[in-house]
Image (cartoon, one colour):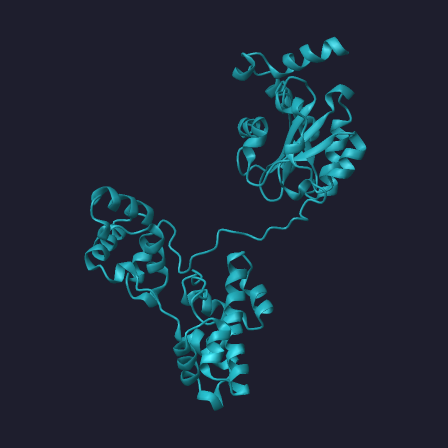
Length: 380
């Protein structure tokens, strides 16, 4: 199927999957065309999906046209058909005469033709306002972003709506060159010069972490940090596919580092379980983890340690702020680009020991090691 011969339904399917972040080759298999055809459609619109169309309530629907077709086939008068539909007689008469008369009227063909003729492309705001277009083009050439231009215009011309334009209109005019408003050469002045606009949304896979328990179900005692034994965890990335796991106790900010030999959920769960099992029972309560799939085997970890795992909301690293802060401190020992595979578990333990003996402002300049020892000793 060629792109220019693609049906409206196929194009709608294409754009729906493109907005969801599917690759061109996957979309081509879903739509039933070649992937260059998908690229042709996307490129033609600059990666911006056309606005969806809808049928106004006042116009004849496909069901109405079916009733008209049946009435015409029975030989009913236009007035009788109009009374049945609650429409003026002139509406029915014009509808039939416009689409083949009494002998040639067909509901499906009439509805498809009316839908095609009803298309009314809206003229672009920048196309009808030369002064506004010139100002926008000049600011783009000065490397202003569309959002900066839109905001500046509202402050520069507060009482002149004719000189206002949304940043989205500027983007559309740049990427959809068929509008013929702004020159494609201005794209090079954007912060990220691209020929098409890429969708921000990505496919959501609810089964990425099976049986994940939300942080919203975590016990209140973990949130207020009053009781030790509640941990936050994440992986610290190094050069290539090298990782170490970082665990931070919420009450004392005590740090544990765990060597991860292979990046798969079973290995991560086993390595964490081995380390956590060395802790006293009263320090094994909960673990709050990032949304990453590296702990998809969390149930095996819970079985081995009796520690319930809770997962943060997507894109919410602040929900495990102690761990995020600690990972920042650890970059002093593991700068970006460091191959973490060369560190043994003994070396990681030594680094964690140094960090746990450093005073923290959040602890009143006490150390994590002393804070944890003070709350564990009375119960030992």
